[in-house]
Amino acid sequence: MSLTKDTETVVGAGFRKSKKSWSGWMFMAPFIVVFALVLLAPILYAVYLSLFETRMIGGSQFVGFDNFLRAFKDAQFWDGVLRILKFFAMQVPIMLGLALAAALAIDSSRLKGKNFFRIGIFVPYAVPAVVATLMWGFMFGDRFGLIGNLNEFFNINIPSLLSANLILLAIANIQIWTFTGYNMLIFYSSLRTIPEELYEAAELDGANQWWIIRSIKLPALRGAMVITTVFSIIGSFQLFNEPNVLKGIVPNSITSYFTPNMYAYNLAFSGQQHNYSATIALIMGVLTMVIAYSVQHFGTRKDER
Image (cartoon, rainbow, N blue to C red; front, side, top):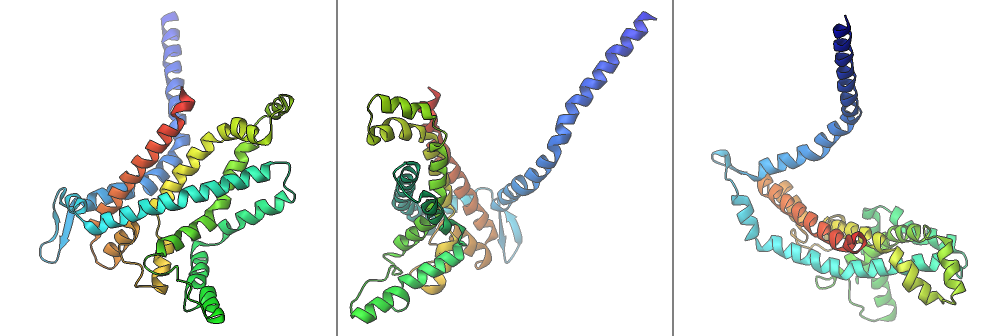
């Protein structure tokens, strides 16, 4: 009788434990389903496409890693990658520097009307990328828009930022105008988490504003700087909207392979090369992930020590 009761107790405990372990997976199930459909399925399908090549005669044929070997020898692809790296080196330091300066100014007690400046700097982020690109595109033209009007009114010859040599600078300007406010808010939010006791202790020690910025605020912003840099890397490697819209205004300044994303897009939808387009997309995804992870790893390594 006692043995039977003990057996029932063990079986009941095992059933409750099994039910408890499955309840966690049941709560996770909606997320797992969405994650699988939205992220894993497209990646796996892209990997599948990259291993095949569709030909007019013979249809889709397995080619292994031939598409990847073709990409590593593709001068147009690497030309786009090099252009993205130049864009990143030119745009990101200026954008993050302006965002940091704005956040420090708004966080200080000396700036009047800081709420107005905070909203004013952030407003460009609310403007859709296509609208912002068209607005700046018509301002930069030397035969129309603001620069064209200035040339005509003063009878001068201001060079167009939409020329082939300066188009990358024009796109960097649009991105800086759009995303400075977004990064400023991240920096400003981090600054607001610094305990007031640190400022009071610094004032008791006779520290000036520059010492407070260098010794308290900038170290506290280290994590935010790493995050904004990682976001900027991902955003730079995803550059597509601005050059694609500007290509309609100045088609001679922007090629179909201006950025890797444009190259992949045009290969898929204009060149009907879906397999090679998927290969380009996969290589860019891996390249972006490696660089972003490296920046995050080295940026947070000091905090982990």
